[in-house]
Length: 140
Image 1 (cartoon, rainbow, N blue to C red):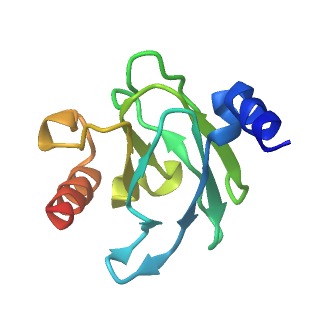
Image 2: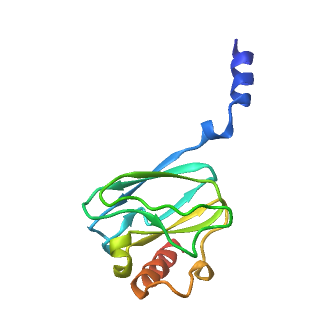
């Protein structure tokens, strides 16, 4: 019986082993106004990220220019949860559309390669760029 269970486990698709991670969208936390919590997430390819509107007025959307090759853009509705499965390895930039220019952004590392300053596009709004630089500095 134990052998049969072990063989069955080996045959399950990799998606069955994928994890779901929760990110809260907030008005404020210890890092300041308009944060995602956590602000930096490390996941495996195929994991799902569920963005939770813990405070009103927020959404989660991918940032153009910060979607790894093979990844698909996404945009959630204001005040609604969205669950996104990220298969493409690399660094994903995530924003809250209405608060992006105020710096409401986060980074998701899919796979083993950590984010660096080189992953940040030149055309980020100033507050979003600063938020991401602060996130990278806190990761050291």
